[in-house]
Length: 301
Image (tube, rainbow, N blue to C red):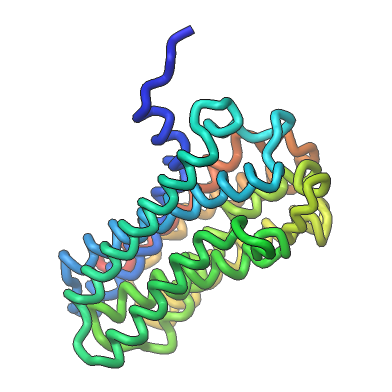
């Protein structure tokens, strides 16, 4: 049996399928800034790097926290993590977690240092950056991780929706508009949908481990209805924003993603067994990315 390389082990632990989703929220924020004639390439690149590092940090922390609490076992339906295979130890993952946290802080500091204009900007975004790092770690790590309390969905909505989109826009335009809440909400909901697939898939194992995700709390049937609602509200948010601000057909290109969202939503709603959702997590991440790319194109055109 071929031995995995060190790079491949850590690459898989970073969960590369989730990383494009982190980039999508920055893309939407940058596109909105470009729509206002305020696009800044370096700010966008630093935001990309910082968000990717925060996503990797969250993934490392998730694996580490679940490992410490014994939530991830060999019976999990999703792919086994490297730490479950014994390819890395808990101590190695903890050191990697700390390293990525430091890199996230440094990257975020560069972003804020370059993009801020007032001391208020500096204080607010420094505080939000530290909060993002803490939130990424404490999702499953600590005595009372909020991921075990069913608060993961609202956290994803805030950080991958409102903070990522509006923060990226503000650091370039240095202003905010009320109607930007709509695309930020839509982007966040698509990110929540990715988490929801994960929680639907792992519902039985999470129950046994005492990980009370939202799906564990509301049940699988309501969870599937919730999933369809997330997709519908995301598309509606983008549509309302476009109707309020645009009039050309090419500003509605994001509607091309509608068949993908409908097909995916129907599949999740109709398939009740968790094992049937095994390949759907990557699919949901891909659909979210495609939808956000099409929306960004719709905005900048």
